[in-house]
Length: 75
Image 1 (cartoon, rainbow, N blue to C red):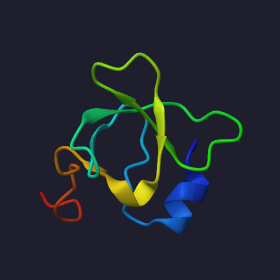
Image 2 (cartoon, one colour):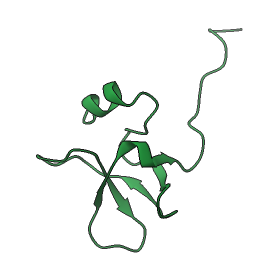
Image 3 (cartoon, rainbow, N blue to C red):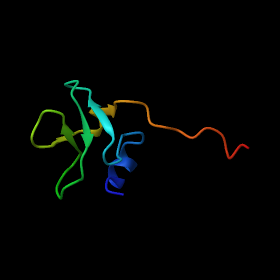
Image 4 (cartoon, rainbow, N blue to C red):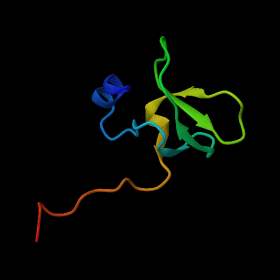
């Protein structure tokens, strides 16, 4: 996983590449981008901006709720 350290420090933070997210500080929407060496947060490719921005994981939330499996193999 690319963002294992973020996932461990901030449980519930969106860390899957390509997931649609919203920046809570500005309200802008974007997608999670691949991590680069030296990044301390999540890289988000914000819609309408050329370069991705590095954001604090506490200020990034899912644009839509993540899909969660219901039940344990019901038939």
